[in-house]
Length: 384
Image (cartoon, rainbow, N blue to C red; front, side, top):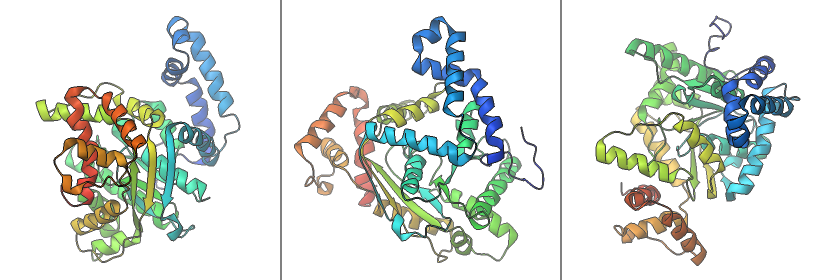
């Protein structure tokens, strides 16, 4: 583990550098928890009856897969191959708008609505990759990094760590100051783009809103350095670009409905161990139908408060959000806002696909499931 020093003040939170790749890959090829996870997924019977053999097979497979990987770019090129296969098998269409209006050699801080732990930034990266632009550094909460191998894989994929588990006000403040300084350094010195979610946690109810606290964190570094800097100035320096991502279907929709119902009925939802990891796998492999990604325009310095910045991000995210037939069909099924319905683009095939998905949802979760899809319509029309 790295210790912090003045030449590398972000060693504990930043993505890995190229010179660290070989050591990390060697460690991963021997990690028993990663090897067990892989064998349970790919060789379940062998893993059960001959765990040592299945681990050895997995270790050999990992080493073979990464034998030519010596840089982060090499690692991400491998991921791009998987991403193309995943897109072909789990999405029926992927469209990107707005990227052509952004300078290809300029770093931006992309702030997106948040539906899926790994897919939201993965689709942003894939759009950049297809446009032959550099991929982003990805903000990821330390609550998702409960296993060392997960941390290693994420940091190889250019993720940096957002502290959520620091204890005490002073520790949290110090952690957020370091994070703010790292993000600012990435944009203004490294000229390296960043993706982060507009709020902590996925929008499980389908209502996308920016948390102003995130914007306060982002501007901490500039304002600590220059007390006279306004929030607008600090935001403009970071070249913040809102990003909208819309999925026709969410592979984690039933799980989200279960969580929403539990919170509503008992006030609490207890996550099972590794639930976040299972969500990541479900998101990647599950059927998503059509996916639409829209890049907005960089924010200027014309803002006086975090709330004003949040309102502009929300305006762009909702303005760029693509409403699919699934959204309108869910609103129709709930029957409580007929004035918002637009079924003009809904085909018989869309309706049949929607009914088939709905039929798989347990009865007690149906209203929560439908609300996830209906709420974006309400939110885009200013009705939530």
